[in-house]
Image 1: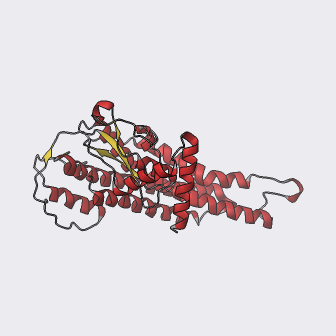
Image 2: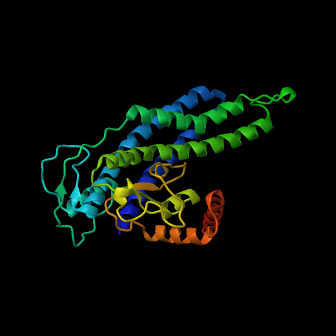
Image 3: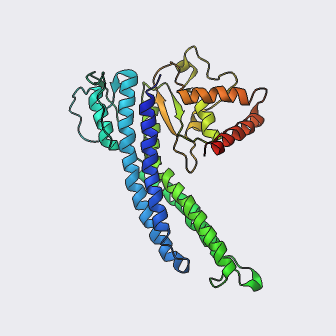
Amino acid sequence: MPDRRLLDAYWRQMARMGTEVSVQSLSNWSRLNPVSLEATGAGWLAIMLSVIRGERRRTRAVAASFYRLHRAIETGYTVPPLEGDYAGDTPTLGDLREDWARQTGTIHDPMSDDDLEVIVEGFDWPEEPEEDHDRASTVSMVSQGLAPVYQDLSQEDGDRGRGRLDDPDFLSDLNDTMETAGNRAAMAADREVQRGGRDLIRRASQADRRVLGWARVTDGDPCGFCAMLASRGAVYRTRAHAGIRNLGSAGLPEVHRDDLEKYHNGCHCQTVPIYSRNDFLTDQARDYSRQWREVTRGMAGDEARRAWRRHIDAQRRNSR
């Protein structure tokens, strides 16, 4: 079984970092002026792209620290630090937990296996494709935030003077658009910040010869799609890596590697590497697996997915 405490700590830390930037986006969005949207919008975008770029680096550092500790716990082997010179020392699990605590601003509670030494294997961390990530952030922030407001301002409605800033009805609609666009841009900023850590885990695990597959770890309130991915458990590289286990599980939807990397705005789920053929299902994922079979019994395809979405949506409403 995976270290559930570490997995929970990982997605919570990434969620916290994304949420902090989301709050910054909303705060700066409140300064936008529709009368001078071109200037104030450009200022907001420049500020947020700079913030996102810096926080992406932080999520990469957190993801690397998680990766090193998770790999060590699962295999007894780890990889060098993301940055800095590696002196060839043999770290202990306690050392890796101290690094995790330092990266996340938490306290390392001593554990019984802290003195266990871990072998460091040679490994080249993937470089961040900063230009690609910057372009993705720009497209996301503009499409979710500025573009809807520009569109609303450019509308006209014949004799009513639709689009004029002295039209009370238009101003009311514009205010709604500003609020909706600001919230969507904030969620986009959250997702773009997490892109740094998610991309690092994806690229590193693809190059890691010890990785057999991947699994989705959900946040505390997953949507139907994310809960379905978690219910699947491990997605192996190949049938050979799966060993005697089938890649498909009876009664469960087939999930591919690319599916695990799909994230929506507001999503704080993470995809993590797995290193053994042992059952990866966490308690939450095991429960989702059971629920899927019950809710979709006798169904398949789109019918099963619709029933599952209704079921999860009802659960989320009732829990709030």
